[in-house]
Length: 160
Image 1 (tube, rainbow, N blue to C red):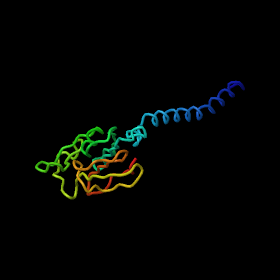
Image 2 (image 1 turned 60 degrees about the vertical axis):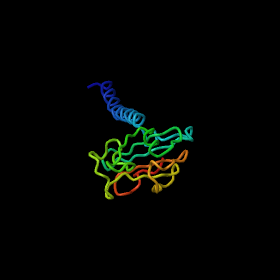
Image 3 (image 1 turned 135 degrees about the horizontal axis):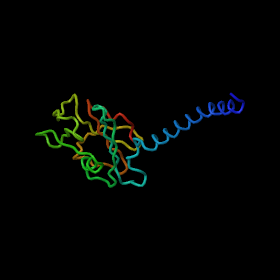
Image 4 (image 1 turned 90 degrees about the vertical axis):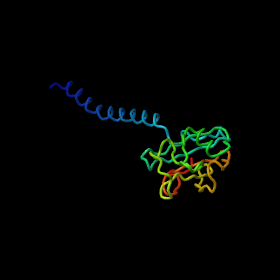
């Protein structure tokens, strides 16, 4: 092998790790820009009247979903619906949430050991357990509504 060919081979060998790093960085950039953050669907500062809704589906291995009702909703149920979630009541117990986006499936009747608990928080604050049902509670402008399935624990993320 001649000296010129040897130099080209060494140059190519040095370029391979740099090329690999460039490809990995490009892939990471695509992943980061295409992956929505948990706060992406939260009401922004421009939606000061809006209410952010956090629904924790981790019990069902679906993660946490966040939506926004851009207007101040009349009730927590309106906020849940306007943020893009569907719900059903426990049969024979209107007002008591049984399913959100078809979870649990089937409805478990919401025993004390596993039910949809309802929470409120200031943005970036701490979750406060609701003492009123979502049909009776009037969400505060700019606040966060939270829902988590289980034994009465708050959503697994902090309020956005």
